[in-house]
Image (cartoon, rainbow, N blue to C red):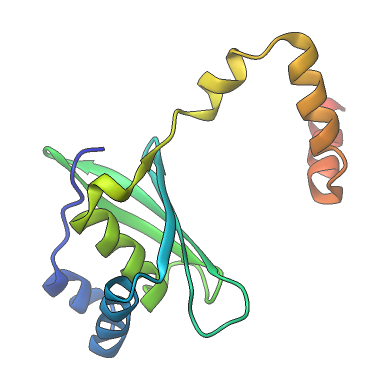
Length: 140
């Protein structure tokens, strides 16, 4: 992944200063894990105050020779809000790119499957009610 280009100063303009400070603390305390990037999408998990880790998703847009965060979402808040968990994932990806797992686009992986393997994946996904509804809509 090319570098992520956003300064702490810019993050502080988007998020409140206390949110920036808390996000930097989460990053410093190694509470961020499973940071991955796949075709312009940055994802990660953050151990916050909740029982389960918070799920973070950041859409990245190309900008010159780098990526900049475009939209953000976290399982702790409304989409589009720069919470401390979003800040922590972005900071880890920016400052420690070697810790970010690069993933191939799903379309590339799916195309490698045999017909039998693809059917097996689809059948297993259909066991999830919300996914089954989506599959049924597509197949109508």
